[in-house]
Image 1 (tube, rainbow, N blue to C red):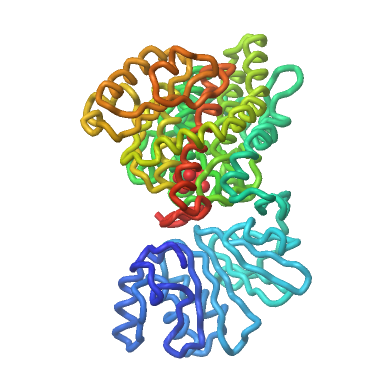
Image 2: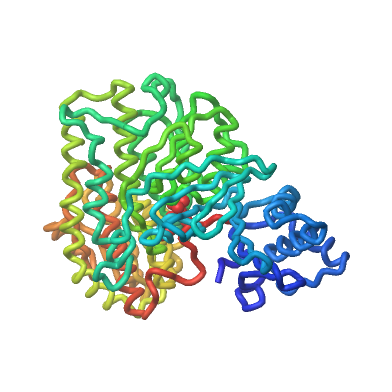
Length: 540
Ligand code: F6R
C-alpha cells in the first residue's frame, strides 16, 4: 500500500484506482494539489468516486478524455496539463493490455529494459537484477512502455531521445547476503562505504579533489555564506557540517529544515553556496528548497547517494556519497558517508580559501583515511550494545544528549530509535535539558549521553550528573579506556577516539544505530520497513 496522503490506509484507498468503466487502472506516487476542485467537477458531471484519495481524480479525468476519442497517452497528457502538484504514475487500459503509459513531475520515475521486458519503477534499486538498461524520465515527460519497447515524449507529444544511464550498482548490493535484514548489512557495510566515498578525493600529495564539482575554485572563493538544507538524518549530517565549515573554512553557515526553508524568505544571493543534502536526491522538500535557492541566484551543491537523481541533475555541483544502494528505510551508511563527504567539502573550501598549512591539512586527511578501520572496530562491539539494549528494554522514555558535534549525534540516535523501535525518544543539546525537558527525567527514563572526549567533555559530565541525580539510567558513548566517563554511567558504549573532534560523529553515531537496531529487534519490529515511513519522501 502506498504512503497515505489523503484518506486512511484502507482497501478502498489502495492503488490501483479504477475509472467508472473499470477499463482504466492507475497507480500514483505524489500529491495532486488541486484534486479537491477536480473531484467536485467530476462528481457534478456524474462520476462515481470510491476512495478518499487525490489519485482517483486522475483516472476519471483520463476516462473523460478517452470518451472524447483520445488515445491513452494523449488523454494522459491532456489531464496532466490540468493538474498541479507532484506525480509519478502509471496507467493501463484494458483495450491495449501490453501498453503502460507512465509520467512524472517532481516525483521520481525510472524505466528499465532487459530484452523483451520493459519496466517502470520509482527508483533504481527496485530494478536491480531485472533491468540491463536504465532510463530516467524528466519532469513533464511521459513514457509509452511495451514489451521490449520504450518511447519517451514531452507532454506536447514531441519525442525525447532515450539516453541510458550508467548504473554501477549490482544485484548483490541490493540483496541481504546472509544478514538477517538490510539494516544490519548496511551498518556492517559502513567501513567500505566510507572508504569508497573518500577514494580519489584525497590526493597523494595531501591536497583535495572534488571530481564532480562543476563550480570552479574561483566560484568557491567568491562564496561568502553557506546555507545547508536537508531533512531527517541528512539534516543531522548537515549540522555536523556546519561546525566543520565554520571551523575550517571560516565561512558563516546557516542551516534549516528544507521544508521550512522553502516557505520563508531566506537571504541569499549569487555569493551564497547552498548545500542540499539528500541520500535519495529526490526528497521533494529538499529538491524544492534547492530549486528556490537557484531561482535566487545561489549556487547549489548537492550531496547525494544517487547518481543522476533529480537533485544531482539540477545542481551546479554534486558530491556523491558512494554508499551503494540503501534498502533499509532508516538511513545508516548513507548518513555516515554524508558526514565524511561534507568533511571533504569543508576541507576543500578551506583549502581554496588558503586557510591551511600543508602539514595541518595532511594530518586531517590522514585522520579521514583512518575512519573506515575505526568504524570497523566500533561495529565489532555490536554484542556489547545488544547487552545494553537488553538492560534498557523496559524503559518508557529515552533522552539523547550531546554538545557541539555530539548534539547532531544525539538527534540522530533519537531519530533512529523512534523510527524503528517506536519508543519515545528525544534528542537535545545537553545544556538545554535544564531549561525544561529535565522535568520529564525520572526513574525509568534512559539518558544516552554522547560523552566522548571533545573540548566540551566536562560540561557534558555535569549534565550527566544532573540527570543521574533524578534517577535516570545513564548510558554513555565514551572513548575506549576512559574510566572517568564510565564511572558516571550505568552502561557504556565504547568507541575509539576520533583523530579530530570534528570527526567524532562518524564513530559516535555507530553504537546509537546499533542500540536502536537491537531495541527494535528485541521488540520484534521489522527494522527494514518501519510503520508509517517511506524510504524516499516524495510528498510534502
Ligand atoms: C532517517 C531517514 C529520514 C531521511 C529523510 C531525508 O533514518 O531515513 O529521516 O533521512 O527522509 O531523506 P533523503 O536523505 O533521501 O533526502
